[in-house]
Amino acid sequence: MTFRKQLGERYKMDEKKKILIIEDDEDISMIEEAYLSAAGYEVEVHRDGKELEKLAASGVYSLFLIDVMLPGRNGYELCKAIRSLTAVPILMVTARTEAIDKIQGLGNGADDYISKPFDPAELVARVNANLRQYDRIVESAGNEALKEMQENENDAEEIVIGDLHIFPKGYRVTKNGEEISLKTREFELLCFLAQNPNILFNKEQLYEKIWGYDYVGDAATVIVHINRIREKIEDEPKKPKLLETVWGAGYRMNK
Image 1 (tube, rainbow, N blue to C red):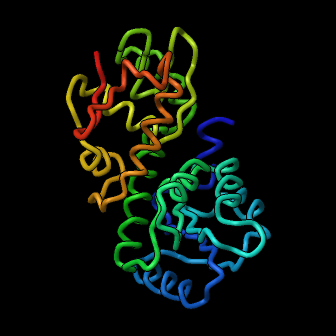
Image 2 (cartoon, helix red, strand yellow; image 1 turned 30 degrees about the vertical axis):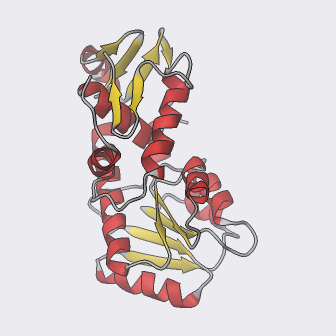
Image 3 (cartoon, rainbow, N blue to C red; image 1 turned 180 degrees about the vertical axis):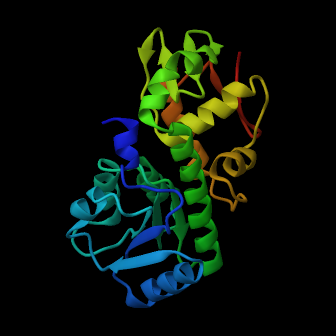
């Protein structure tokens, strides 16, 4: 599946954004719908994920807001199904506070999560931030034909760290000449660290830089993405040499 196909052919940055909420609690969904509508979004609410694949494949939704605990298929399963069809942001809503539950959501393709009970204003802020980030990605992807014509130019601007080659404009990463598949946030995080080699960043700084809003104490998001990147770029992920952890301080890309 090409990146353009994952983005969705019908996605338009200048159109009013449409959000699909899957939430079986009517009171919570009413609050979500009211605040997101007031923020200027078009909102559609479903109680379960029975027609999810059809809805996700339609390409009309800009973001999915999914509760974890749902009748039938749970939010993790729905998240995985959506991610196989589209690259638009997925925001998980969970009453669970254990890090492992949040890690599971992120591991199934979610871009972000918010814990119940939540401040509706924070929900809107997270939606705004995820859509801003996605818009930047869509814009950078540009027209596929134009990207192909500019491929040589884009690939010329690369970051080389050992046998790792990163092409920021082309959204490509290779190791020993072989293409590495990275999800959007993984690429953004890797690219940022590679563009700032040998500089130590703590989790708060990375969270604010990549996710686009203030750190709220959820370290799991950064940790999960760092571990995913290591699995793909390190010879020995358990003994990383490129993407190093400085215990108690943060992470840095060694060059």
